[in-house]
Image (cartoon, rainbow, N blue to C red):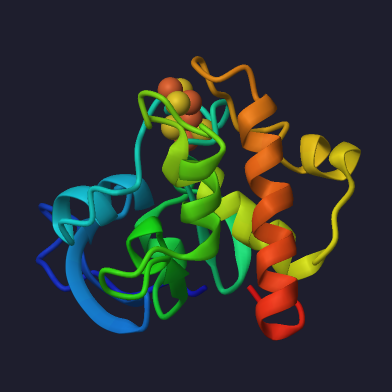
Amino acid sequence: MSNVAPVSDGSQDLRVIRVVVNGETHTGMAESRTLLSDFLRHELGLTGTHVGCEQGVCGSCTVLVDGELCRSCLTFAAQVEGSRIETVEGIADGDELHPIQRAFQDNHGLQCGFCTPGMLITTRALIESNPDPSEAEIREHLSGNVCRCTGYAGIVAAVQQAAREIASADGGGA
Ligand code: FES
Ligand code: FES
């Protein structure tokens, strides 16, 4: 993360932000106060990242920045200049669902789907750091992601299935 100089005359405070999102380089304009969630959705058109509470509570806006979980509603776009970002759009391999996505589908880990982008990204981070999480570890790791629909049982089952499938497919890499 780094600060970048404004490119305008100062009246609009616009600056160029260059990031790598899901492996592709993107360049867009942002004011110094533009949130990463708004930059992704409105400047780059990546609307898979959802915005719920806008105050860091619900987890629906979660993305990975340089491999770390990040609340994009609490992060300025200017803070991530030059960073590598992963969003829900980068999880599937073309039309092929990622094992995490298949597991959420198989276990009714979503209903309305509003929380799902944040759940998928957070699950991916969990399995990458802990390929065989216990139920308690799953619930702890997902405790910052709110779901109003499922009651969480299906989500926990989905994470367990995804971890098993990823481990058997490639030895544990998510
Ligand atoms: S929208 Fe960012 S945590 Fe709720
Ligand atoms: S599926 Fe509706 S909020 Fe989680």
